[in-house]
Image (cartoon, rainbow, N blue to C red; front, side, top):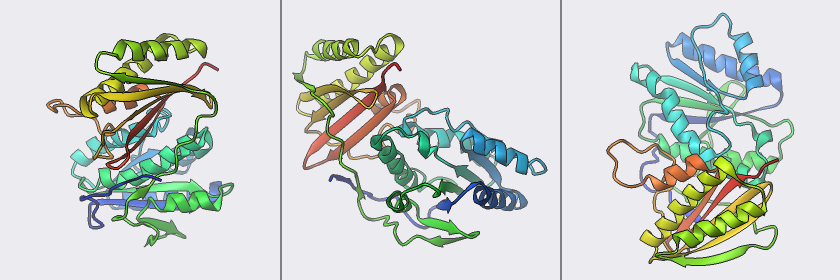
Length: 319
């Protein structure tokens, strides 16, 4: 397994409070979330809610007599968890600008996560939230998680990403959360079938795009999705050439309903948040991974000084 360092910035005294709320069933969901929202409104705190549409309808019905609650479309960022930190930054920006404390509720539609890779990246996103908002203005995020049909190991893995756990209306510090230990990634899945491998170097971007186009044609990927994938793979190949001794390796295959393009090189990405926060207007560099996250349906990044970098991008295939 590979790891990424937590580094400085994750402080338990930060203004960000991140809680996991395990519950079983609809009544428990409403009991915990409605109480959380009403407590916030009574304290004149702003509330932002991002939950699946069925849960949103339940909350709207229960809160018809409550004060203003901002509901946002939890599906808006799409399948890729790499877009969610920037989405939350945008969702809470106007509320934080008012000078009021903010409370958020974020429930992931785990049943819609198609593959183990999707679920692994969703868990990693939950861990990264602690780093992304460590120095943000004060706000509080509650993450409901339905345990009705969940495997105990899944709950254990998710709990390691949250500094606090809420049970029976009270939150307690979570001893499973180790802020100063490296995040332990799950192993990347092996390709389910044969793949094509292409070493490349400076001057080979046309060959890289041709290889991806050929693989896409074989699996019926075309039009806008293919054009977006070609932009993404060009960015990744360019990064390998610029930052990893001028060379890298591309692998392509189809798996779990997606076309997968994997880039390997001997470079190292030190910042685990690279590509997940929207670049500022005057920022120099650092836009390539952001663009890749915006274009692809899933992005997996594994990087360590000893082993180099592996980046897999997934693009959903038709049907």
